[in-house]
Structure formats: C-alpha cells, structure tokens
Length: 251
Ligand code: NAD
Ligand code: ZN
Image (tube, rainbow, N blue to C red; front, side, top):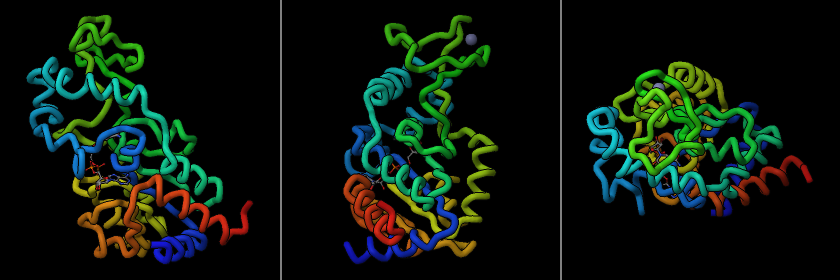
C-alpha cells in the first residue's frame, strides 16, 4: 500500500489540474451510513420505495418517517473527518481545484474546501412543494411529520431524489472540469449512480489519471482507475497528503 501511496503522491505533486469526485464513503467515518456497501441503508430498505421522487410525492409522510427524519438527526451531528480535511490540505498545497460531491451533507464546505459542486443538492435546505420557498433544515420542527411551510405546503429536502434531474449548472460544470483535469481523485463512491459515475470516464477519455480511494473494489477499479488505494479515507488521506507535502518541500 505505501508504494501505491508514493506513486499517487508523485502524480499529484506534478499535476496541474486536479478534481476530486466524492461519494457517501468519505462521510462514513463521520458517522453517516452509505447507501451501498457494508452497513449501507439499502441492506434494510428498498431505494425505489423511499428515495424515488414518485414514492415521496405519493406519500411524503412515509418517506419522512422512514428516511428523512433519521437523516436529519444524523447529519445535524456529523462533523468533517480526516478525509475531508485532507482535501482542504491538498487545495492549500495547490494540488486540488474542485470537488464534485454526490453527498448532501455539506461536510466539504464545513471542512473549508472552497470550490464544491453539489451534484445532488444539499440537505441543509428544504423546499416547499406548493410555493417553492426554501427554509433551513436546522430550523424545522420534527414534531409534525411531514414538516410544513408557513403556507401549509409539504417540505421536501433540496436534494435530488432518484427520478429527478441533476441541477443543470452542476452537471455542465462537472462535465467541464472532469474533461479538463489531468488527475481525478475518486473517493468513497460505489460509482454506480448515473450520471455522477460517468465523470471518471470523461476524465479518463480526456487523458487524466484516475486515483481511487475505497476499502472495496468498484466497477472503476483496475479498469478506469489505474491506481486504487484500498482503504478508508481517514487512514489513506493523511498519508497521501503527507507524501505530497514532502515532494513539494512544504512545511
Ligand atoms: P454508495 O453508498 O453507493 O457507496 C459508498 C462507497 O463508499 C462504497 O463503494 C464503499 O465501499 C465506500 N466506503 C465505505 N466506507 C468508506 C470509507 N471509510 N472511506 C472511503 N470509502 C468508503 O455512495 P455513492 O456512490 O455516493 O452513491 C450513493 C448516493 O447516495 C449518492 O448519490 C449520495 O447523494 C447519496 N448519499 C449521500 C450521503 C451523504 O451525504 N453523506 C450518504 C448516503 C447516501
Ligand atoms: Zn410554501
């Protein structure tokens, strides 16, 4: 493993434009369960029954009770871990420009990363189904499920449900930075949710090297990602950042 980290550090130290693509796995060590993989929510729930927009519109109360209420409790407490702060360090070292995240937890921004594309929205906000008003998730009252807007409409998380479009600006910019980078760092994603999963393909097609951090192999491993660093973000990222720092002679 240390040899793979050294090789990845060589590549990052020489890179001109680096983009990170992150998924639920980077936040697992902040106490947020992923959807897939070990301990994933889909071991006990059917995604189409709770995370599809049709399921929500059909019965918002049920989806709030089965999924969104617990998400709020978990996300309210979550704080960035060494995976998130490692990306902030890489940015300070001039070795990371943009993060494309599939996560809705806001932990990259909380850690201090400055350019984060939120591919699937952000759970910090709710939107009224009737009048479109946005309200902060922190302020909503869970005594009433589903929570309601002041107009009486039902509130929904400002996140992308299955069956919904990716915000066009986020999609277009992600495609653009993926095509332009010379290294893509893919961390904690099962690389199965489209169109996010196509970003490493776009990067690779345009000549980028793909470095992957994940304790489990993914459909990208050894095929699109030429450099898999097999392990969790909290164990790998600080070692990778230290190795990059050494090459740049940065204190
Ligand atoms: P996923 O749940 O499909 O896959 C998680 C991946 O993380 C797996 O490949 C797993 O092996 C890996 N992993 C587990 N522990 C890890 C660790 N400690 N370090 C690094 N990797 C680890 O996640 P996905 O690919 O992001 O797709 C799921 C969708 O669910 C996303 O679109 C996202 O919007 C949403 N989601 C978000 C959150 C969040 O905001 N934190 C949490 C759950 C799901
Ligand atoms: Zn309203």
